[in-house]
Length: 197
Ligand SMILES: [Fe+2]
Ligand SMILES: [Fe+2]
Image (cartoon, rainbow, N blue to C red; front, top):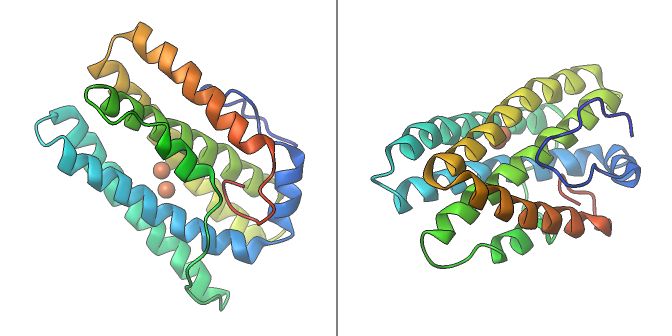
């Protein structure tokens, strides 16, 4: 796998087999990507409702929610251009497994939500980079390259928010646990092509 970006938060880099699966199913990847962007916007929106007096969080996540919705729109324009109809798609277990790891009481729920989002953004950044480097459609590759930069910013923002509301030591320790889980989920390649197979 030709990745020049060793992503800081991630425990393990993506395996070559994911890239092959993705390149063999670029249409499905594009459709799944549309779902990912919509969900990313939704996750940010949910946090805005859950933490209405956390000012830094509100300011930062308002911008992220808007950007993810823009990405959603842009990916959907690609779907239209390629004649791929919008349709539901069964997700890989990745998102639900990470969501289950979020503790259900505060303040742990806030910490876990921020770190899970940071990890998902970091993995998306890494994988969009792999698609940008290897996608045979040069225009689409360019599109992936552009999104990759935003996702890098997003994972930085989620991580910074975690360090704003929690002690660095607590953040680092929990991040290590969640990063290991995140990499473990991806160890067995999900047989269907998804951004997070
Ligand atoms: Fe995005
Ligand atoms: Fe993002």
